[in-house]
Image (cartoon, rainbow, N blue to C red; front, side):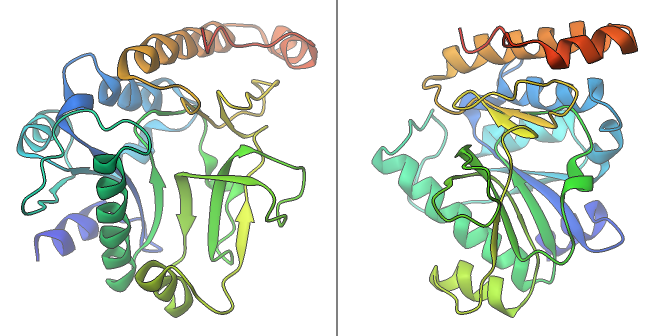
Length: 255
């Protein structure tokens, strides 16, 4: 009932919510969650999206911090598992965290809510819903984009995805296999990351600290990204266009 209440309060009119997960390692003051929320506040037309963001806390400390900084928080407890510390990519605890997240997202679909899931180390700079089609079943970001949104050779990254609540996607999240599931992959020119940074800041909607291991490295690089964005938004319209046509990378990160 608590989850139903939180989702209802955060939902858009079409029953879509934005979800991210948080543990204590990323919840400290000045850590990843503060940069994440800060990006919404300085992005183009993104501050309003905070009204539809639910922070799913994986431990009590993260939940307490969430309550102090954001209106929509949900505590996802897991018996016998401590998700407080940093979970490095592909370690056993990281995999447990991922499976718990998949189970939770399946429950959100079961309750009839579409969702955009975003890792907290993704900076939001533009309202990206203009790139999402309500007819799509599952849309996922990439570490590497081949140029074809339907090509399964795209290197998918589960840190960002949009999922439409229906019988097919629910079956996928329950059994990780579903007949008739249509997957669309997102262009890294718009949904960017350190693995394959967008070359044009006039297009980019998000920047993910993927291909970057360790919280201190992520924090350093994400602060650089936020500085790059602030400098870009301070430019004149003419200089923004010139920035987009430059052959040099507009980003200082990854350092």
